[in-house]
Structures are given as C-alpha cells and as structure tokens.
Image (cartoon, rainbow, N blue to C red; front, side, top):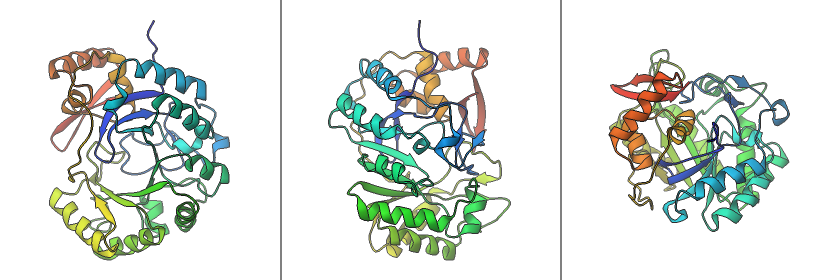
Length: 328
C-alpha cells in the first residue's frame, strides 16, 4: 500500500538552486512564525513563536525512510541540492541537525540547503543546526519594523533588528554560505510603498551589514496569500537588481530571470499521482511546472490532475492569466 504522506518531495526546479530534492520537517497544517502576505502556501494556520509550541513534527527515522524510498527512483547525479523546506518554518523542528547528519550519509557529497525566515536565530540550538548546512537562504523583506509587520506579519514580539543582528552573528561565526532572499511586489492597498527606491536602498544597507554571499530578489510567481499582492514585471526586477548590485558593492544579485545551468538530465521516469500531490502540497504549480518537474508528458500530468480534482484533493486558481494547481 502506497504512503499517503511523504516528508520528501520532488525533485523540483528552483530558480535559486537548480534541481532540488525537498525535505519537509514540518507536517500539515502550515506552521510558521510568520504569516507573509505573499506566501504561496496561503495563510498560516498555526502561527507560533518557538519550537516548543509545535507538536506535529517529523523525526529523523521517517525522513531517512522516505529519502531512501525516493533515492531508489531517482539518480543522485540529477540533483543540484537537497533542501529543507515545506509546510512552514523548518527551523521549528529542532531535530534538523540530526537529520542533516543522517541525510549526508545517504546523499554523499550533494550540498544541503535550507530556506528559512531566520526568526529563530536568537536560539543557540537553531544556530548550531544551521551551521551543519552548506547553504542557508534567509528571508529579509523589510527595511524597518513597520514594514516587517505589514509584510511578514510575525508572531509574538519578533523584532526585525534582532533578526538582522543574529544573521550577522551567523555570518561571523560560521563558514556556511548565506544568501538573503527578498520578495518584491506591488499592492493595491499600498501603491508603490514596497518598491520605492528609498525604501529598497535602506533594505540594501541592512543586507550589506550581514555580508551575504548572494542576494536573491524574487517576486510572486504563484498565487499569494492575499489577493491585493501582485508581481513586478521582468524589466522592473532587472532595474532593481542593478540598483542592488550598486548599493551592495558588487555582491552577487540574482532574480528568477537570471539564467542558471541545472544538472538535471531530461530522462523520463514513472511518476505516481501521490508524488505529484506531495509537490502540490508545498507549492502551487502549473501544468508546465509539473511537466518539467517530472519530465513526463503534459497529457499524463493532466490525467493525474483531473483525478486529483475529482477526488477533492486539488483545486485550481488563476494568477495573471495562468492556471495553478494546489493541494487542498
């Protein structure tokens, strides 16, 4: 009998990392210290302040079992990264450090990354877990506390200046590669307030104090949590990226429109509807996305999607003229 839930999903194509095999240390519902207005997973169901508030977590043994099962179907050579990311903030699971140790034995020399909002870096146990990664991609969207609260809607008394300071500490005390990811968007509620050059310049100043290896400028390309959020055009992203490069004195700056060369081969493989569903639980996808992810025909993808929709497991949403499929 096939499992109905897996902590491992993909590989999926990431504009930041190439072909990435996802590991999700959080189980549904979406659990996070933030409730970002642009999140592709929708509103945060369980907003928490600390790991001790979370009970629905996965253990090391489950991750290893799911990873072994997945690695029997794919080639390690086809992966660029193994990435901790999924149903919320992954650092809420304090077992991640042990997971990394076990995962390394299975994926050999493949680099391991984590996508985090960096809200828990004030904790030594969380910092030690992140020190085991090869690449930490940390979110930083706001230049001040007011914007931080509007954009990220943090839990409790989280302070932006504390997050920035703890990212500086991580940078100083470890050799792990660090990238800062910033989401750029427009809003019908706050026209131009998020993309004013003066605000972006102040954000760049904050980022500069962290001294990251890379800055990743993103814009919503899947349906966001709030309907008033809209993406920037490619030419707007390019213009802002050039500004950031100047403000950051040449630090590497990339956008979704920056070409990368993934390692993944185009070899087709069999895929099940449950594997497809596991991806849709973590990110809304178009038919084109899913065809690329699984290197199967669009006809096969459509057939699976039709069955998943009929069974009530998947829904469809339009975003800027494109249909995206999302797990319910």
